[in-house]
Image (cartoon, rainbow, N blue to C red; front, side):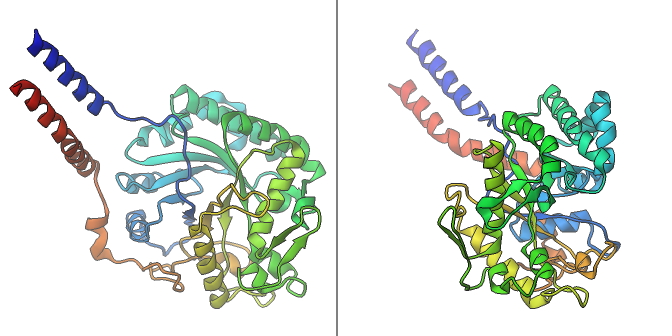
Length: 395
């Protein structure tokens, strides 16, 4: 009987060690630094090479603007954490049809999990404040139907639902404490914020000190925009001092959220960057300024600290972007936000290395490799259990 009890205890220990530890919280952003992988170009490296490049740079958090299957397959087994996008062109259909939303999630999310770490879905991009008013009305319905699909497929603990806003949703953003949502946006954004508050999603903001500076270079200190030494600004309402523009932009968003009744919602920067080239009227678009902004931003994020208004909320930001994109329309700056050139070499040095094809095999882990490595880790953990069992049997 004693032997049976001993073996029962050993069996319980084995069950304890073999029971997987599962997190029940969707975590779409681990750490503080991420990057946007735009692909509006005909000369950039393949998705497989991009996965290698990102692993070499130790950038884990990645956003794409669609659900391209070649990217999802290339990221399989890499450990990279991916937020995929539901493009604006799908919003009306997804808002009107729950079944289409369910099919989209099945085909573009469920079928790639868990090998590809899809951790979030961005439903639309910069919809509110944009030019298509029909999309304004469709956004909330699309968000709800995509979330319902995720929930029905039992993926709500894995995949976070968000949407990214431009600063066009704000009014009176200077000084930061005066920021509120625009009157014509409020009726659309408040129900959206209420839903995101219910499901625990953050407020995602695309914030560009570069765009603010080029719009008013005579009155904005470029050092303030570039995280350089400067006098900064003072907010008389909160008695807070700001030594860089990005912190002020983030706190403006927090002020607008508080004014709307969502004081506890987190703000995450889903796009920020600085163009290295631009047209004659695009002040500040130089390689030196781009390097200065991105280098100082990387240092600022590494400190893992909050903003003056929300010091406990660590700033998290996705940089725009991996590559220069030669097929983008608009001003020249739109084509030149990349940390890397089209051939995979660095645009300027902020501490990353360019693409080296020889490192591809050592940086990529297949699902088989991961399983083998996991068994090795479990085996090392079980050695003390084996030893304890032998001691019990030898008594």
